[in-house]
Length: 414
Image 1 (cartoon, rainbow, N blue to C red):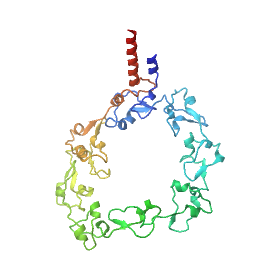
Image 2 (image 1 turned 135 degrees about the vertical axis):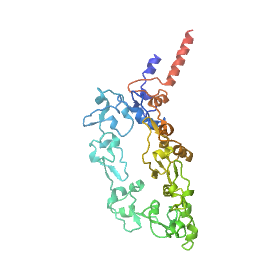
Image 3 (image 1 turned 30 degrees about the vertical axis):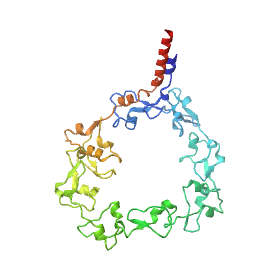
Image 4 (image 1 turned 30 degrees about the horizontal axis):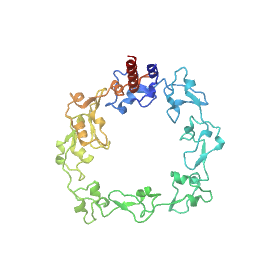
């Protein structure tokens, strides 16, 4: 009896590695691979699919006054069990109307009671969305409802569009310019920061609140290297680091305070995966920093005796500054490059290991590529808590309870 009860529990009731209760492992997982190492992120798309025995996975055409559960904006109601034959009855529900909308989500708007009978695209959430605004109208007793017609009397005032508290503020058409026009922050008093080499203005207004001040209230600081527009006398060069920009200087001291020796290519430490260009040994960089992409590109080239050199590689973590291989190598369909796992938070050791590992064109697959996790391994990692569509399972914890009760029963009978 107990075993029968346990086996009847639906698969969706258990936790698994597929995204949620409406996803199951695909059938025929043998031979299928994830996109990289074993993780839900790498394996979900390749190993899981929407359960075709749930409303979320079935294809159904509903009558015009109804909608399919899988299109609903709120909740996981697509988890309802169904079959192809009964999908229309199981998964089609009556569309909500504007009357079902509790309140309009945009401040300064209210429900249009004249539209109470109008049907929404699907559930109540859909009654107020970016693509369906029929149920709500501007509330002319609020600043948000009056915004389009307000003209502030003086240039030191502004209309804070997008501020929910402001939009819900009570007003009338006659008093809106007074009630709804807010004072702009001033450059001198506002709380904001300027970029290195810039300083706050002491006069003038911001565009709106404190957050807008950095756009209009910062000016070049002529007491810092970064704010002085002078150029260095050859062969000296300027810098670009935050520390350089904040270095104290004047127009008279710029050459000595802000200009430094340019790195020579023969002294530049090329990153792993690259090597020094022998033809560029005597060239100099255009900035005091030898780690800038412009300097690396001038002094270094891809080292085809490394994984990074064979595939092309980024010389920083921005994802934009890349040295491109003439004929980049690629891993096989069932393997992936270690460098594909590099992120903005990866350590230098991880980056160097991925790009700098020794390899040749002949040994590239063996040296630079890692076997992708398999869908079978991904399924096994869930400890059997998720199964294929239509199947049923026993949760491990409940099985232990059953086993314990069975053992107790056997001993009691003795």
